[in-house]
Image (cartoon, rainbow, N blue to C red; front, side):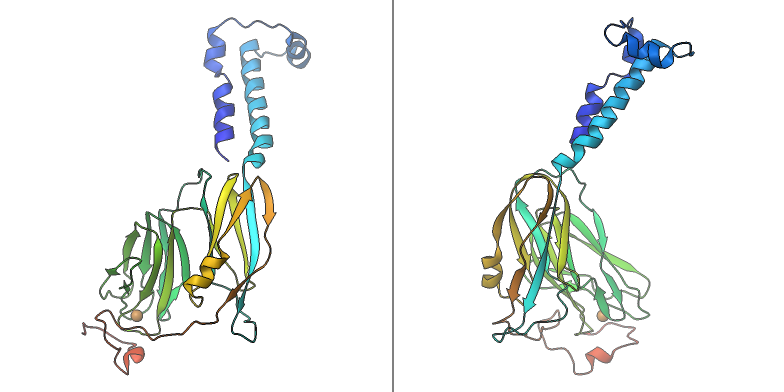
Length: 282
Ligand SMILES: [Cu+2]
């Protein structure tokens, strides 16, 4: 949405330039005299203001033509009997392909550790974004990932402190805590800054999308990769609002597997009860 403004500002002459030359009041002379006749306003000042006014008006009128909003709804279907879930949140949606971004990517975002939970549970970021993991609990936490998306380990860090990771390549990053097996999260790293996650009703909205041809992608942790791949589809954004058809994501075939700790071993039986942890364990 920014570049129409830049064009307008570039076209509009500066007050200094106008003031440097002798103004010639030709066909618009009547306008100037009609508005400011008798007032102590110079022709140079008048014309500079008129140019700027027109530039701003053109910017306001033109900007919506270059940006579109893509919205839609996702339903999670739990099994072959098509039983529906009630919570449709946490589905990542993003647009890949053409269209040049004029929105500055978010360089720092947060994934909180609070009440032994990563919040948000699903986070979508553009490549190059740094995620801070502040520990807001009165106990130690860790964050690690040993999956392909990006391998990292923030080791244990105390209450009230934070650690960060910068994600430089696209992929699905599964995040865990090495001492609390119930803690898990997903970071979806994409080469786009047109993305959203669904709310509880399954609704999503992606704003300020430049016109162009895109591929829409979906990710949900309980959907198999082949089912998600089948949902990838081309869409054309041409400005204005684009409301997509409802998308159903099947969870059929998903088999939950307990994850290991960062050493590739099972968590100790009492690991989830560690509410006052103060030291290192292996
Ligand atoms: Cu933890």
